[in-house]
Length: 595
Image 1: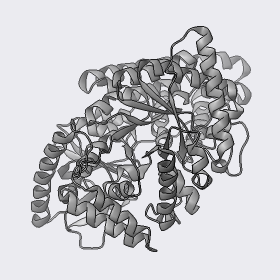
Image 2: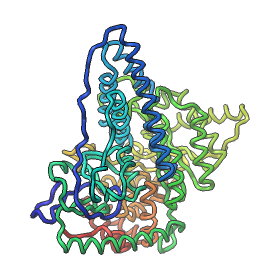
Image 3: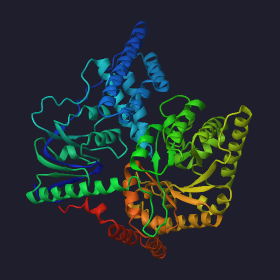
Image 4: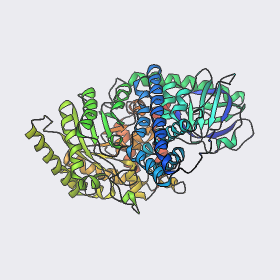
């Protein structure tokens, strides 16, 4: 959205995904979307068409493997693993079998059939609430474009060979393949209309060291090529025709940012301890085993949330026990003796397409998902529990059940876990006999029976994203009501405090693994409410640790005690901001530029 003002210092705002400041001319890139042709086939032409499809899939796979090899050489294996998701699309038998059915049933050409099926899948993924899974649309769009390019005999991707000077790319979106092509001698940074922090393009931009801002709606309508601009990857701004004063202030910002990065490097190997000596472990949230290197690099003291859904994406059947065991074992053994909390499947609803979710549900977020689905699929659930138990022999593994709404679910899950332990004993396979199990507190009913849950758990983890959504009846993806999604709403604070009190009475520790834990402004409030541990995305861990080491627990408790008496979410947020800024001004000064 453009800010009001003159043509000079005209500001467009978006989401910062890769830090840094770039100055230069814009280059507006429109992806050339050739119309996908459709023609009918005779019955005898179908085998040849299926063969043509197969050749295109093989060529696309070879092309992606070459891209992955190049990325490994230039950026490393972690960044190259992004293209594993692309390769999985090419191996997705559900998708490919449907393409073949369309060709045979409708007697249409391969490119038309592939595009129709892929568009249907992408539309379904785009509707999900989970941001990580929603961002996989870009991966699928990338693969689809490559397959269509081979079928239609056209060039693929972003061509910048004609540029005479470095530019700031302005586009609707950049796929991972587009991003890895970016030559830093020709590209200063990029801004897109759509995207998020979890997009693969954003991850690659950070690896390349390119400033990037996404989610700048209508930027293609607001910006033309060859306009001098300043791209602010710290605050998520694109400033058109910046004044000399703005350029000067951004020079100051860069210097402050360098100072902050030096301070953050100093705390990476330090523990999370407040000024008055209270220990606050700072852990990391991860999506897959490859993220373990990021956990080590950011100084996290373990994994507070290992989301296991990634293992189930883009495949017709759940992963086997050994495949899951290897993924969990790799993380547990690498981080040993640090704790690794593995969340059992939070699958279902409309999170992503799955052969397990066959029926359309009127309200999927209140439907057959997470622990409910797992308890009704005991064979599938047992496979995961056995894999987690086996991995516990290799490190400090804990089990966490998502979306617990009452005591019966927790007891059933623990009973199944005990049966899995008995199976492993009979097989002579080692595991941690004392493995800890915990409940995620993310539904209001779980808060209200937290005392009973605490007697059957070893720890609690508060999932603030869903707790806020379910408590306030707010879908934050709905633009009309997103402003009602308030982490500092008095009701949310009281629910958190009720949870920590129940845990305290039972001698349990409580962590927060939702987005509130990754927001420095809210960290003192959470600690004051009785939270013992925080778990956030790896890039946020140093900032959270830096702040924790600059506050006093008595100040945090005073803040929470005051907040619990207040009626205004905005007033609470302002007081939180004041405390955080006073404690760690450098965290916030590096983001402030008055325009």
